Length: 94
Image 1 (cartoon, rainbow, N blue to C red):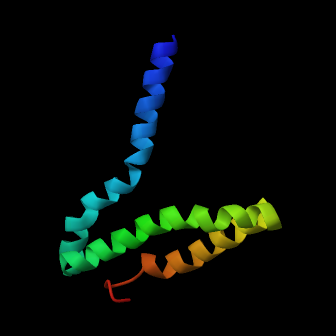
Image 2: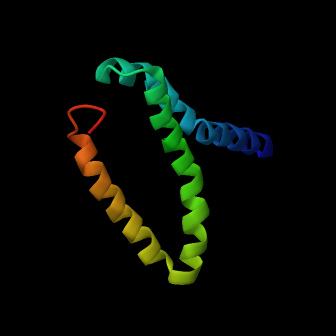
């Protein structure tokens, strides 16, 4: 039983660690759809992965000082406000 639990934990951790790398498969599709170079798509994906790392690093200590509700509600609101125009952008420059 312990061996199965250990193997499942290892597989689960491996899947979670590979989540940001799944975004790299979209590189060719983004490049073709928006007719941009590979560097532009890599920049967007790199900033996404950097945000996944820096977000918790910066927000974590704030939640200890100001409480979790306000620290999590404001970024969700900002995420929604900034994602709304991106969903309807006609090109990558918008």
